[in-house]
Amino acid sequence: MSTRVSPTRPIHWPSTITLFGTSIAAIILVPLYAWFNDYSTAAWLSFIVLSILNGMSITAGYHRLWAHRTYEAHWIVRFVVMFFGTMAVQNSVLIWASGHRTHHRHVDDPKRDPYSAKRGFWFSHMGWMIRKHDSGKEDFSNAPDLLKDPMVMFQHRHYTVLALGINFGLPMLIGYCVNDLWGVMLLGGLMRLVWSHQTTFLINSLAHIWGQRPYTDQNTARDNAILAIFTYGEGYHNYHHQFQYDYRNGIKWYHIDPTKWLIASLSYLGLTKKLKRCDTFAIEKARIAMQFKRAEEKMLAQPFSMQIQMESVKARLTQEYAHFSLVLQDWAKLKEAWYLETKNALKNSETMLPYKTKFKAMEVEMRLQRKRLQTLL
Image 1 (cartoon, one colour):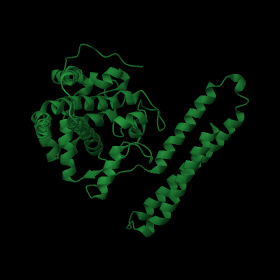
Image 2 (image 1 turned 120 degrees about the vertical axis):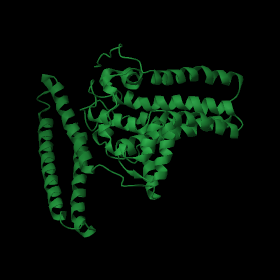
Image 3 (image 1 turned 45 degrees about the vertical axis):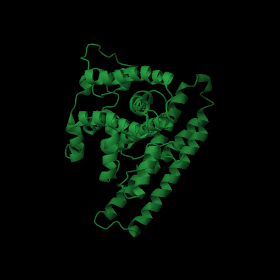
Image 4 (image 1 turned 90 degrees about the vertical axis):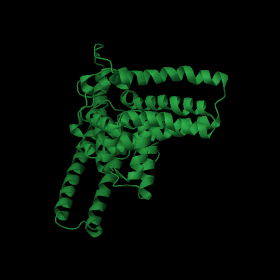
């Protein structure tokens, strides 16, 4: 259910002109040019390459590096993702990351979430940028780390000049070098910008409407493998909202998460480090808790005539839940013992090995229980 958005809020003209102006221009100029001229291969390549660079600079840079601090990066990596993130025209790192932290803290709150999905698809997709809403007021109190970052603050102070310079300068330079100025300007410049905007905005809108919620139903975020293809891995949004400090969004080997692959690959080159991963036990715990909740909802939804036949299933679920509770208790005790033992001692491999073995065994047990529940349901 969406909350009605007041149409009386003042229009934010810079955003409105940028978003609608570029979209209308792309709809008219890109096919019009194609009618009279052929786009060169270089122009199409500029669209593809620059779209990827823009998109992954937002996902790996603005989002997972600066907004969530899921890893640390060499200054070269930070410069590159800031350069192409600026080209994506989604505001400065400071404004983007601060607003995104507010979104996570107050997710779905119509009054405090800057792009709350509870206010409707249009609002969460683009509407929140078109008008000056109270929920979108800038408040950098949640970003003291960014306020101390010289690179972030330089970009923030000179953002408009940088964004305009890069968006016109780079496509013009590429177009001049490949002898197709207007083709590159239209595809690698204009069309690339519109594509980058719309695919990013889908995470705020469609990823809160369409998909599954395997980890939590306490917010509207969904996992959507199709969206992950177009958003460089950001489609696994339910996981992200539950475990926002994990550098991964797609945690399985088969999950399409190019941003995760990029960050991990750079770590082998020494360009990224301290990659944060959520504890496997916590992930399995969240998934099993959701399975129990859905099982209870399904049983309550059964007609009265089926209740007797469901008694055996209820008994199994009760047994599984009791086992689940015991495993959680054992895990808590093991975690406490590990902290006490290592509090005043060096956490070397010999000290950690017995605990790692026990933690691994518990993770395996949780996976087995999840599979048993899947079979039962």
